Length: 255
Length: 255
DNA sequence: CCTCTCTAGGTACAGCGTACGTAGAAGCGC
DNA sequence: GCGCTTCTACGTACGCTGTACCTAGAGAGG
Image: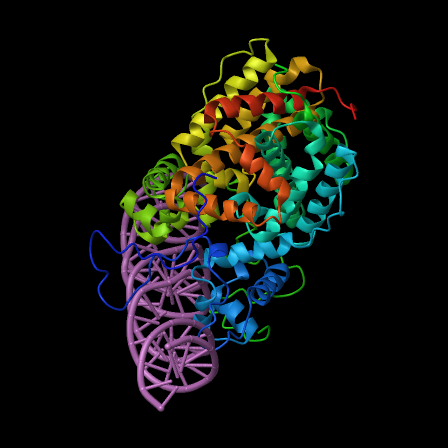
């Protein structure tokens, strides 16, 4: 962090070009919603909060999927006019940011790491899988955008605390976090699409079977033929999670 | 509204299971587009092909992003009426499937594995990263939906061939493929969002800096303070790829 | 007190995916 | 050859989306 500059104040950068005319002074509102204050103090007090908005949106997404979350729907759920929502959330993207961070608030962190890094990481991972299963729309969101809300910061800080004993550097541990989280999100995402469509799934099996039978894909055919019954998802998760954790804790430069 | 039935068409759904009546026979078209034949042989020959449609869509996505890919735009690019496109692609989802598989056609596979598993996997990974960089919209698509087109089958078969010497089972190797591909897609995705917004990035740094300075996130602050200059992306990719490959090749049950 | 800034919300617009219907071309059975 | 059937092409229209813009009015600061 070079040149630490809190400066939340105006700083209209007066000199140089253009006296900024007279009144309409939108001096570049921040693009990141967490940089905008929730309340400035002037005018009537808002009827809603970021939390309540996020809760309403999450309720809709849980019940009817992410596509059902529209500005109109969320506003209606809050009992507000559609356009009023834009006072809280300048773009729909930011509404998604709020949802993501609100869901991240569901983590329960122990007050201190246990000292067993693998166990702590596994706990975190299982919590994450649980959250993803409670909110099936979440993996897609996590995979689509970074999103660094206050609760994500809390998570990150805890992850760094948990992995401190490994001796790895900060950026290595951040990478590790990204890798683990990515794996979990993808696992949950796959679980979701697999669960979603019985028809889709049976068609897929037919398609793969036909492909295997065509003789064009010998290795695939062999793997297909040798495949056992579908494994227990939780067991598969733990197995692969273990691999990922090992990879991440591995000292650098193994080749 | 369950009762209201405009039903302009016939289909009176006569008695019981019905002998399929006479004319309106859409006997459940497959949901997976690769299960539908591209051409049935009857009627006038189509003016376009799946390949040309995918190419048109990819052209738009490369130039203006995935959001610019609409049915209207793609149809116009083909010189066709909007609704004509629906003869080839029953839903927009399927258009995305076509795009995904067409991009997957860019892989160049050696005729046989070299015998060096790690090298072969690294080659595949670098090809994938290259494809992702050529088509910045692709990672989002890959992360969002499974998608198993003919080219994906070719890829899968090759991956299985390459990993055959490891002695791992078929489903283990499929999992390995998913894990590696997921990592690469996320890496590319991150690269893209990082490259996209200079403003966004600088705001983020400010936000993180403020968070670190708040004292609320000590570990984050420490990692932030100790962070060196941003690493070369290709080097970072290779380093983490190496870890992931190791994890994947690791014999099961290491704990 | 006035004034200025904020919030609430309505109206409106461009664009989206796609249901539906019509017109005509091309292959198949006779 | 004929005719039936099935396909392709495409215009129109509907409901929905995100959101730009505008009008009122509430409440704090001077």
